[in-house]
Amino acid sequence: MGQAKRSGGFSVHIGELADRTGLSLRTLRHYDEIGLLRPSGRTDGGFRVYSEDDSTRLTLIRQARALKFSLEEIGELLDVLTARSGYHGLVNLDAMETLLGEARRRRTKLAADLDRADDLIIQVSTNLQHPFQPAVQQPG
Image (cartoon, rainbow, N blue to C red; front, side, top):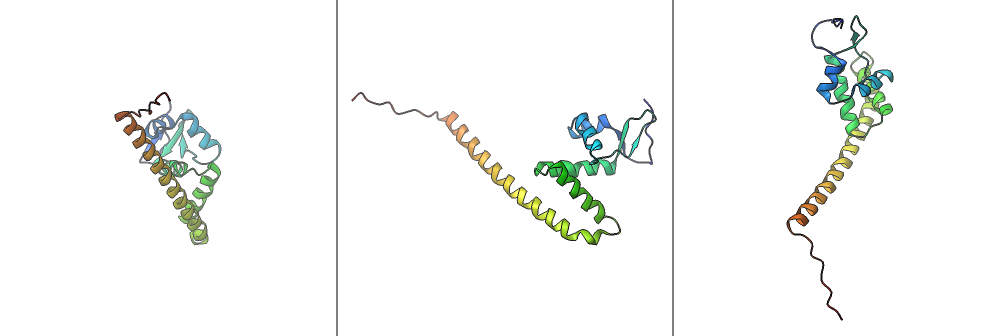
């Protein structure tokens, strides 16, 4: 395997990034193909190499996926965040506020879903400890 072309600092190949994040190689390649997560470089042999900034971007992608954002929505979110860190960032404050509101709304919904899941677990656990005994009907 060729050496990673590095500009210094953190640098990992796709396999190590997959191992660190629990994502599949296929997912990381797909994110590259659709432009969500382009590797910062390639080895002499053509293997993808990811930087710390790429890893941070992937963390944002995973967080947005956890909130059930589509890949298209995540692309828009990353565009807004990337623009925000650049010269014309102030132009996108409304878009950032909209995305923040949507993220909060989705988080609230997921919290409610988690509460319902907890209720189900409690009911099943209680039933295991004290099995339901159907009433025996007396012959009439």
